[in-house]
Length: 325
Image 1 (cartoon, rainbow, N blue to C red):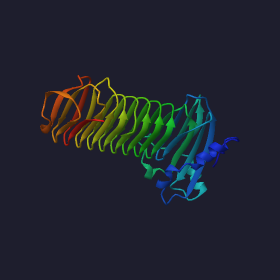
Image 2: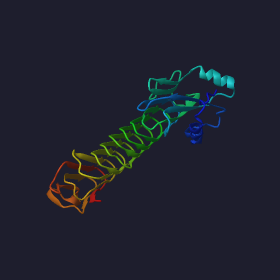
Image 3: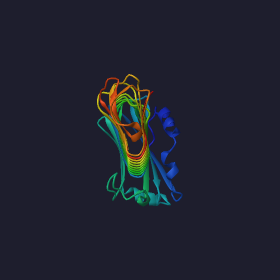
Image 4: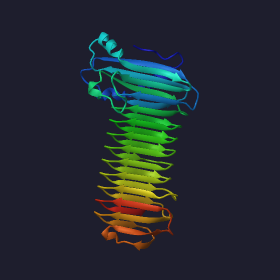
């Protein structure tokens, strides 16, 4: 089953087919039927694409026209013939439609309980992955229960959720909300507030212009440059943050099972509160008026550059380091 792009969209169609198929690496050897469905929707800037699927991947990239292109790749796990695939499709809720200036893409097999409560990819006879091209001035709201999510760039916001895969976001000018229960999160740039959480992987944020909230239960948190405030925590890894510029609210970096490193500009004023029960505190290149504590015994409190908002650093099983960039 194939719905071709309308005439005049050849450039976008070629770009879309040039994408690496995200689902290809996880298609089982038993899959015999693969179908591709495509549709295009003229839109105005400022809309939102909403994609929901169970067991598949989602990829969103930007184009130059005011058109949203959707390519859905249906992989039938339990079908050897077209007739069997057609029978499976009768139980698949499959939607590609415009809703005002927004575009909705949805694939849900009958009996599934939603993105966070489906029976699992092994029991789903059809897996649907989506590749979408949107105008740059667009928002994305994406959810999958068993795959990866990639967004290359957006001027608008991105809210993405997966319970079984990785998340990779490129240059997102708006607010970012990213969560996964079983993978890693990489955010190249967030132009607004950034919220990232995972229960089973690492978080890496290359640059964030707004406030950052990042938490993981099973990996490292690394923020290479943040110009807003930050709250980062992990139960099973290290935390690193490069704080660029004077922050205005208290900052908290903490871990139960690793090291904490804070790198700051030399002229930032702050109240330092660093404590670890399993290591030492190291302060390099800072002028500190010490209020209390002994770095070798894992505690240090004092004012840096006359004081300011609190920089709270905590570890239960590692060292703490604060240094000048």
